[in-house]
Every structure is written in structure tokens, then in C-alpha cells.
Length: 294
Image 1 (cartoon, rainbow, N blue to C red):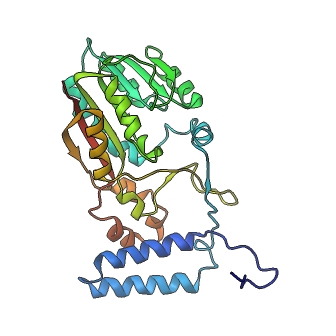
Image 2: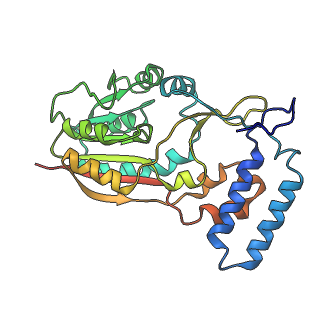
Image 3: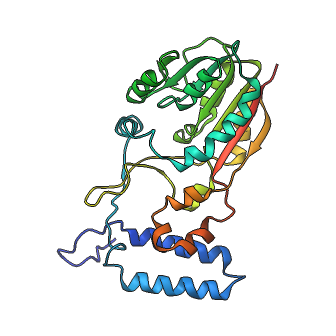
């Protein structure tokens, strides 16, 4: 195809304007048939954005840079335990679903444990805890945080344990990094004893509608936005994987995006009404509770 760029023209950049325009467009798409006044207000905002696209904040160059999984998490490890609205939305569901199955005689697995946030909680409930992660940088934080747990550098798809080792397991916000979660789920099911409980959380497919990825490090002027790729899995994909692994669904929760999650979006500062309409009523998480068939 012939290049139509004028000679010497700068390469196109990914700007904040592109993201903001997407949020405005999605907000109208979700409500265009019920609120003409809302539509007109968003059109006015979009017109102003386009007219001022070369001024801050619309002109802010985001230049998102994808990092390979291990490199990304090595960079993220030092700040991962900071404020994270997604984690804050997720943890109460994990605790609620696992608490009835915990105690001093329980052996628990934190699969893809990261910095060991769930491992720490499981240990505090009296469980004997193992954690597994591919990232040695994340494991270094976990070992310092939970000295009484055993942590292993390993892949979710090749867990270093015998069959039926664990009474309970959790895999939180990690299977999204697999294009197909089936092999990881089969491995989690393999090391779970018959009748044991597995809780899986993952970003919901709705996150993709809002341009979500595993961004880290914030927005720093002059620096690219950094991210690790999330793959968003449908209910059909999850259910096929669970059947393959011999797991039965005992609960499925799809909690909506919280106010804290939407407030963390840059668009909340400039287009709060559009963001509220775009994200309103959408689920932000998959939370699955599963039992290993006997």
C-alpha cells in the first residue's frame, strides 16, 4: 500500500486522546437509545476533545510498551503490593469462599502466588502453605512476607507436586496470562485431592471493553505506559477447562466494577459521567469456586 504520510512527518503516537475518545464513544453506545440529553453532553465533550487534542491532557503520549511476562513482573515486584483496586475488589470473595474449608490440618496451595498475598492470608488461618510462581523477583518478596510458607519457582502448567497433595488451592488474577487456561487448570486440579476446593479469580471479559490490560508503574510523563498482556477468557472457555480437569462449579460470581476501580481510571478525572456510563453494571471479575470430583 502506498504511504500517504507527507515526507518527514512524525510517526503517529498513542495519546490519551485516543483512550478518552473511546470511553466517550462507549458511554454513548451503551445509552444512546434512552437519554438524548446524555448523548448531547457526551458529543459536546467529544467535540471539545477533538478541537483540543493537541493540548494537555489529551496530548499526553502514552506509548504503551508491552513487556514479556517475567520481565514485566520483575519490574512490577517492588510496587505490586501497593494500592490496587482490582485486588481490593477480589480478596473479599476469595476469603468468603475459602474460609469454610480452612484450618490447622489443611494444606493449601497459592498458585501463581506473586508476592504471596493469598499465601500470607492462608498461613494466618493456620494452613500449611505452598506457593508457586514463575517470577523469582515476586517470590523474593513472598518469602520475606511469609517466612513460614514454602515457595517454589515453577510454571502453573507443570506444578512440582504429586497428585492429590492439597486440600484447597487458589489461583488469583494469573490465568489471564495464558492464551488458553486449560493446561493450568488441569494441573491445579491434578494436585487437588478429591473433594478439595479450588478458587480461581481473573479479570472479566468486560475489562477488554474498557481497554484494560495489566498496566503497571502508572503514567509518567516522557515514559511509556508499561504492561503485561492479559487474555480475556469467556465462560465457555472456563467451563470446558473445568470439565477437562474434573472440576465441578460450586459458585460463580461476577462482581461489578467498584467505585474504586473506576476512580483509578485517568478518564475519571476528566470524563466522570462518561466513565460511569461506560463501566456501569459491567462485571469486573470472574470468581469461580470449584470442587475436585471424587
